[in-house]
Image (tube, rainbow, N blue to C red; front, side):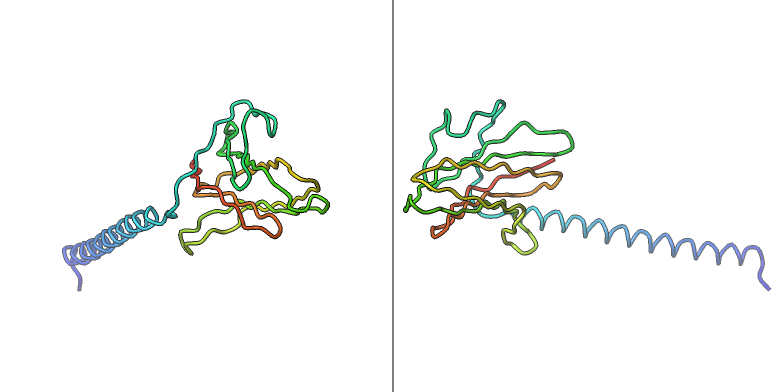
Length: 169
C-alpha cells in the first residue's frame, strides 16, 4: 500500500532524475557548441586577405583603373537588402596568338572548413579573339557568408587567383 508521502517521494525522485538528465544534456550541448565555434573559427584559409575596392558608382570596364595582366582586381558594389553582395572582378587578358580565339573561365570559389579546400560556388565561360581584352565578371553571393576568392583560367595558361575575401551578413 502506498501512502501519500510514499507517492510524493517517488514522484519527487523522478522529477529530480529528470532535472539531472536535462542539466547534463544542456551542459553537453553547450560544450559541443563552444567546441564547434572554436574549431570553425580556426578553419580559415592561410592566405592574405583581398583588398576590395569600394565602388559606390561603378566605372566602365577599363576606365580610371589601370589593370595588369596576371592579376585579378576586385571591387564591391553596394550591398543589397537581405545579405546580397555583388563583386566585380577585372583583369587584362593578353592573347599569345591574336589570330585565334582565347577561351577563359571565371570561378568564384568558397572555402570549405570541413574539407579544407576551395569549392566552386559560381562558374562562367567566355572568350575573345584579338591581342588584348579587359575582362570583367560580376559574381553575386546571396546569404552565404564565408571566405571566397575569384579564379581566372585562360586556356593554356596558369590560373590567376585573387586574394581571399570574407563575406558576412
